[in-house]
Image (cartoon, rainbow, N blue to C red; front, side, top):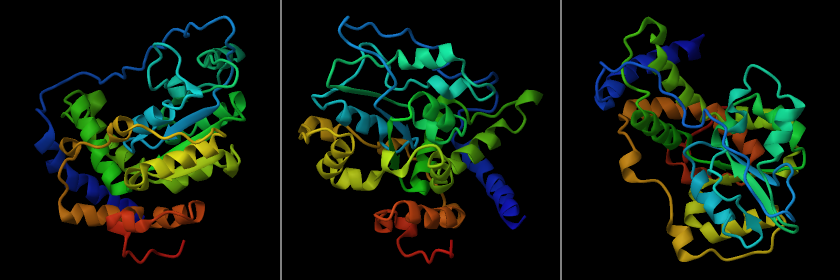
Length: 300
């Protein structure tokens, strides 16, 4: 009850913040995902085989997953199907039903590769969507999962920037959209509760099939963390080019300002989850998450 009261106060405090960054409150309509339509199955040479992905980058949103996907796919033994978009988002729409055998088979059809090569996908929303874990475990039980985790406060601010650019934070006037902006803000907050999400995924995949990477460490030691990723995937090490390493990361313009009081509130909100995350990720370096570096975390 105490946490719920703090959450209500937090959402109320954010209203001026969202109005400041919204182009106007007169806009109407629903924001649709560009991933609503499935893309065609990729064409491939006849000697290539298809099957479930060898790896999936499941999250987290706004944590450098596109950058890391590009580095992984730069390996000579990793292929990316021709004209396939970076994020497949295949399971996004199965929140209300279990896929049919034909739908599972179609998913596997998106991953052609020659013998001796690996292929995978990236959909950072999967980490946050609880229905995906059992579905992916059903169709790709041997897949290796890669997760990049960013300071949850910074991830939240970056997530708000994404919502702002998509128009999702515009004021809504239709009765059916009442509170939609606030729900999106709370969703953006909860995406940073990594331990809760990972605990669910680890009920469906063994820990040895999950690689947890700290985004800030990947920025500071890109080649070292990339070599670690290749080892996890069973690939020989390979150096990334300077261009690939620098094709990152987070632009300053994507960060919306957050007043100190709200930043402190967010640190408090995430503290217990960060404590739980340390148990799942012993090499988590809190010195790289400035809000948590000297925090006395509550017993978890």
